[in-house]
Figure 1 (tube, rainbow, N blue to C red):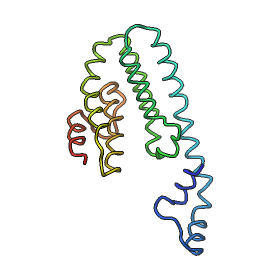
Figure 2: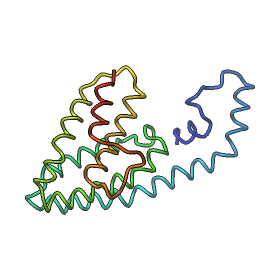
Figure 3: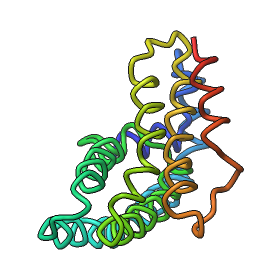
Amino acid sequence: MIRVFDTNFELSESVPRDKQSFERVLAAGTPRLHGSFLRFVEAIKAVAPELEKSLRALDAASKHPSGKAAITDLYAQLEQLFPTDLIAHVNLDRLAHYPRYLRAAQARLTRAVNDPRKDSDKLAPFALLWSAFKKKQPNDRAAAEELRWMFEELRVAIFAPELKTPTPVSLQKVTTAVAALR
């Protein structure tokens, strides 16, 4: 709920320090409050069924001996995508991409069970790059956050290219961005 208020009243920009500023922010934000809340609800409603499908697919796939590496990686990905305080840390624009990320995970899982070697070959360069990224201690938190989401897009590009990414992304592009991260 705090995130709805922060987003609606744009409190992340600056907190009003006097009564006049507070009243101005309150007057501007109050009429938008209901709409802001509904945008969050709609975003979550779009994500929930895809998450449920993904979890069911992971459960079903875990009964097969093939695809274990993909299953482990996908659980780790879901852990990254869905922290306990998801709404506090993920903005609405990014949350709108979650259904596509989850559909990509489902497509990958289906393919990994059928051809685990191919999935493993695709995962290897990604995993090395992800590991290098996680070892970084960047000063520029915004750049690191943007790069973190670039990895989600790279997963789509590698494992489910038919779902498309909003902007072109490749292993080389992400490698360059990881190297440039300070």
